[in-house]
Image (spheres, rainbow, N blue to C red):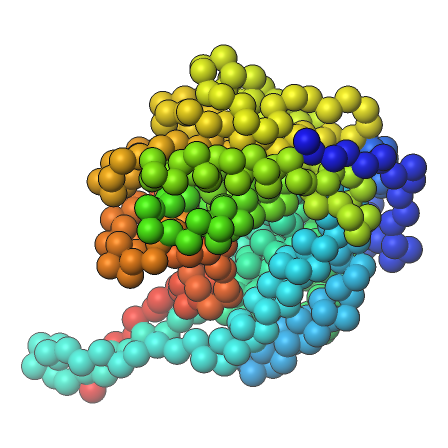
Length: 495
């Protein structure tokens, strides 16, 4: 069964760890002096006390961002913005060890995971959009003229303005990069609200932005509680757009609030992604890839492939393989080399995941791995696999955000497709098959923003990212990321 190491006796943050607000280039405490506790998930011990921004602090940050939009940054040519973003990428790579340690201690994930994915992706994202900064162009559009006179009509793309970026706790550095890099490339300014459960890597990123030459006030960082700092940012009339990644529940609140000021929104709101294993799949590759989609980052991934749909001819083999993969996980200190799965981010999240596991048992799914709580320090949950499940069970309907997989059999492709699309979500899907015709056919019919064939989480800064249905509105990354951070203006000259 799953191995649980002894929890670490103590944790040490890097000496450079920032815990204050970054507003107009200055590190400062909250105006009322309030802080919130940031805990280490593997022990439940205090990591740091972090400044909790007030509504007045958020207002200061928005004003600083607005001044730079109308000032030096707004006048900075794209070639210079691109040079600054390239420097940010270099500094992320230079500080990769520090950033990986911060994310491991703050989130609970094994330190090798941010080193392998989150940090390289963040650097690649800044580098990708550095290349866009001087290539954001409009087009010339011929028309029939204006009352018999010829015209010259063309478009330009201008910055949206001040963007409020609200970042989740599961992959904060990477998703902050997804929001910051295209927005800065397009000439916007930002106020970033880090997650209260894991703010430290974004605060360190603030240091790197300043070192890279991002002018004071262009990026302001306001850690704090969602109901205070996040609410103030969403309601602020000086914010032109909110970019939010998080739960559908909070996304709905943000969408309604933003509508009051006609504030633009991009919302990425999670998923219940299917992984479809067809009868002709490479079974070993499918099991390994599916296990990664279930257990990476303790399953705290918006695109986690938690609904595993398996052709009945392979069902027993896949169930057995996923159970073995779950039982092989080594839980413990995220800084230990032998750890393959860390703790969930908080006691609240651990209790939520355990409630879903109990619901699966009550509703008749069969536990083939895990399923039991872990006593002791830290917020650990054993990786759990349910078999003999149906798509109407709670564990197949709701986003669990933990290391819990639900394996559901199907008999033919039409049934697989029907099950895959029978969900309120539509973020991602994986298809495992050797048949290229099946791959393209299913990929075209699955209702999801991203479909991966014979792989999971094949993400890249050049590829747009976002979902359908309750998984959100709009796209980040790729050219779509530039479009989402610019306004198109039409200029017509009567000649």
